[in-house]
Amino acid sequence: MELEFWGAAQTVTGSMHLLKVNSFNILLDCGLFQGRRKEAFERNRQFPFDPTKIDAVILSHAHIDHSGNLPSLVRQGYRGPIWATPATRDLCAIMLRDSAFIQEQDVKYVNKQRGKQGKVLFEPLYTAEDALETINLFQTVGYKRNFQVMPGVRAHFREAGHMLGSASVSVDVDEYGQFKRLVFSGDVGRLNLPILRDPDLVESADFMIMESTYGNRFHESPDQARSTLKQAVLEIHRKQSKLIIPSFAVGRTQEIVYALHEMFSRDEIPKVDIYVDSPLATNATEIFRLHPELYDRDTLQFLDENNRRDPFGFEMVSYIRDVRDSKALNEMTGPMIIISASGMCEAGRILHHLKNNITNPRNIVLFVGFQAENTLGRKILDGQPEVPIFGDLYPVKARVMKIDGYSAHADHNGLLRWLKAAQLRSDLKKLFLVHGEEENARKLAHAALHQGVPKVFVPARGERFKL
Image 1 (tube, rainbow, N blue to C red):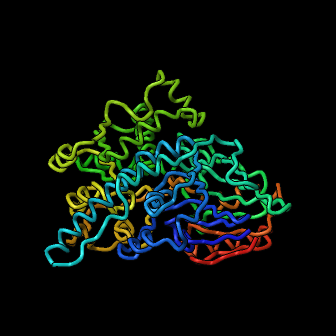
Image 2: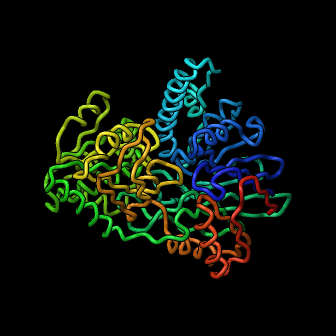
Image 3: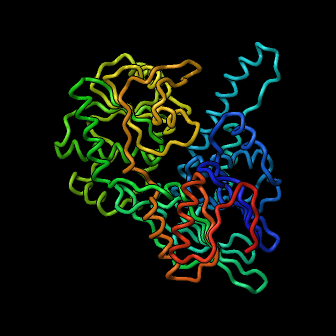
């Protein structure tokens, strides 16, 4: 058995790990790499292996940095199964088509400039047709149900508590009479977050691939996060201004809307109009409504207290689909809250809202999720006085705030707690830390060694390991 690391290796994007066993090639995740545009385009287009030689894909969850390059894999010849939970499949059905639309629109814009310059035109990374073909390959399995990936290879999903349908994956291998278990954490969620259930603990593992996004950081509590959100709403209400929240369309947006719903219901904040300006977020919210079986006990109790009303729909919130309605928000005065994608401010309608509001010192830009290196969101959060939006520089005069408490990733202590449970149940031999910037991963590696894991690795892209 051999592992090759081709994505999310010493970085947080493009999750993709190749398991070779019994002459089969099994891909764990196939995420879109995000970063500098030229590098990202080349890496996402050029796989380091032949897609037609992949026998199966196991997908941990629907976030684009884990699922977003599946259509490229299919475009280049992959026709095997893509194993996922039912909610992950439902979310991918909208997210991959949305991603394809972005790929096509980006290339259309670039080609307009290249055509004027007489340069060779680009093709999109993939198209909506590729995305639909990808969805046709999904095979869904619920949590804790074994499924056969390949002869001698079985797997099952466990609740990861990170987003709707997210899973940790246990892969059981019979390699010529030797039995081994590899656990891939996917993205590990946090305890006591709203809406979703807490992550399941791993029952046993011989080898483990674990995320390390916040491997060297500690989150504020959900109560602190709630307090900061409340403070921001009260401030823009007092100033009659705008609160701009760049948010991941799937997961984080629904959390923020739910938190605002709770605060409004309990008269903790005044009534302020909320606009969820993202067709993807609007569609994703419909998927959330379809899967109440995945809600945690507190959310179900809140629904009972409110006569089973929709947790994501109430009198102050409007979901925006039409472009004209989106543009109209720029002409409106506050107080108002605009929640828009993308979460790292790299594409989508959030760019227009930042362009129109970031220069006003009365407004607030509130970050509620991780900002990767070289993204616009990271530049704003790092305090750059001017930032590029649509090719022009805009001075950052709006107040910039952040909330760590809504992060859907376990922090340093949460990851070690999750890891410890696996250690107590098994003889863990090797741990591979992925999906984290190198410094965070190495700090977590040091802590894992201190906790008793015998061998810990922070693999670089392209590294191979015998198991």
